[in-house]
View 1 (tube, rainbow, N blue to C red):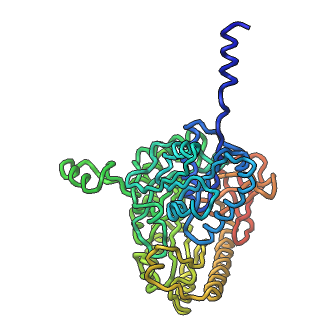
View 2: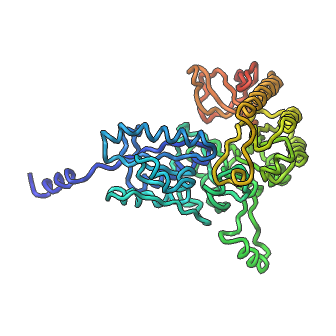
View 3: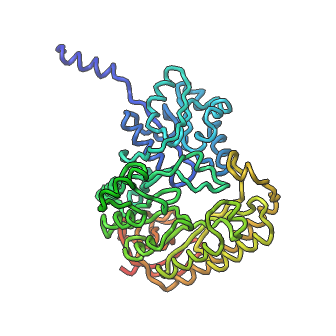
Length: 472
């Protein structure tokens, strides 16, 4: 063997195999989006994806802190890794996201298996922190940022279907709802460059994706001031009248124009910030889905004031009226909290009556869970008994199931354009998709594949799903 070949063999032998990592995600769509950013950053640093956490050198658990039971699930999951770490002492376990930001170094003290704690604005520091850990030092970075939006990161899509994807358009929240921990775990509100958002949507479309969901804690407050603070923009714009603030309505239009074949959804809206301008843009473009998730939380104006929601019952109903006037047939879903501090039975009845008035397509419902350090935890007593909370929740759930079923029955006989997303879990002969109102539709088809647009007539339904037959 000649010298050159010997050197090549020695180089191959001396090269260390690449380190592997696994990201496990809990919580909302924003957390899924963050995990896609983390995956991109880790791959860029040379890490490869492991097939399971047990096979990984680095396990990263992206967490939610919105409710106590979400944190309890994460703690239980962390302890599941005790045996895996025993067999692989070099395994590094990191906790990311909102729970990391809320508890900070306390997590390292309470959970001995944890090596790294990283908040939502510090993901770029992960590779460096892992390097510190490999030297024997546990690492924490939970610094919040007023600028970080990760707009230059091309996320690695983790959804797996290749058809639908999330695009984060902003980070943080300024609303300061009294029950919510998000402003303290994700920081102040800041918006991404609209060009970077549109370019990401264009790239996804070119890669075969056919639907994007624009994500933000409160998308209606999206505003782009040219990359700098609002006060700097206002100073420059007085000298240059052509400069304009990019609002959420303008951003929606910009993304809709990427392609008429790219469906646009968004989440989440706030009733106090949603404008008629946004509704008119939705109505104007067929590829912007006719569906709005509009959290109400409570039907009582007094409770809404305690929650610091920024609107009352009348304003919420006015926004619903605007939606139905400007976008006839628009799908509407909501969030509801049962048993907030000092909520009376009469105020619970106000929530029920608001549900009867609006008749939501579906609702995400929660029993109030006090979160440490929130204004509600500091100022109010969590004084509604758990049994009462549970009873109210059961009534809300039963009513919503009734409304969902009745609403779905009205769709029987109607025809919808459906974007096929995947094969049904129950049968290979069936495919699954959603209509513009975000309702799930299952139908038999041998020739249609994910990414196809199909016209489907609804023939039957359950409270959660429409069942149909293909027309084309």
